[in-house]
Length: 453
Image (cartoon, rainbow, N blue to C red):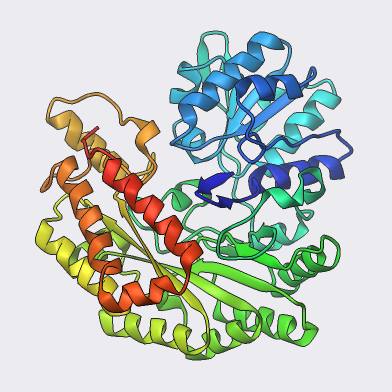
């Protein structure tokens, strides 16, 4: 999964599915088309006559993914083709109406996928499995929901089938050598109104045990020879005791591991950061989103306690040698340029190692998505969003106090104000590789037209 220039992560949802299928005795293959730079024809050439195809998709890629799914169906009509991912999970009718796929795997895919294969092997109706939306003639039928896996159930899942993909395909610019990703928890109770994590994983936080996560990390290092790990949890540090236990296990084992994670600023403290650094944590990404208090509370559910507390946390990270990355968003419905100024001022005050300013993007079935859709309908615009623009780089029509062009201008202005400070320029010149990537990204932003969807 390519997520940006120089960043390529393994498709963990498919690797978990593959591991469970292998455990149950099914033959399975994983193909990462993006990491392998395969176009649709290349993908088709890699497929023989599969009995089942499961494709993971996203809001930004849903259209091209459905075209590929249809091509697979035309080539192999007897194959059952399913999609999974937050886009299909929450808007299954949209996917079914605009394609010839057989069904959508809603919610967490592991057990649903395994039961599809088990049903086929047993001569049963694979389309009757819970957690599916399926096509029955001209009608879309939604089978009963499947409950989310509990924390103790996550511990029972087999380790992702990493052996099915080449390790060297996965890298990020801030780590030297191949990387692997680990998902140690699911769900996020912060429940930001725009967040795709909540759509896909729910608001109930469910964590694997520290010992279970440690066993996976040891396997990655000792069996695969990979020493760089990126945790892909929505809220890594939610359970303080779990993190401290995991850090103690890592420190005692002395694994040559460097790892990164993402969490909310309000979930960490000085003791935890010190333990994380000692256990190999080299970078933390924080979702800050807005410097305006009203917007912060309304849309981001108060992810930071206060500007002062946020500054203390970033300073603690700096003291323990942990690099920081802060995410900010511009273009909330009622946000004005003056409110954007508050966000930029906070970014400058925190002065993390890296910042990311993106356009507010309401992922399908989130609260902000529903509100924005209703707002569009009330103004006479019944067209749905253009999901191909759901990249964070382009305004999609959420802002009301600013036009799309103005949102794009504010994003470019925010990057200039943050990175073109003299002290910051000197700091960036010490990291020429990262500086080049940021220049390229900035040029891309300058070329991106800001227009409402």
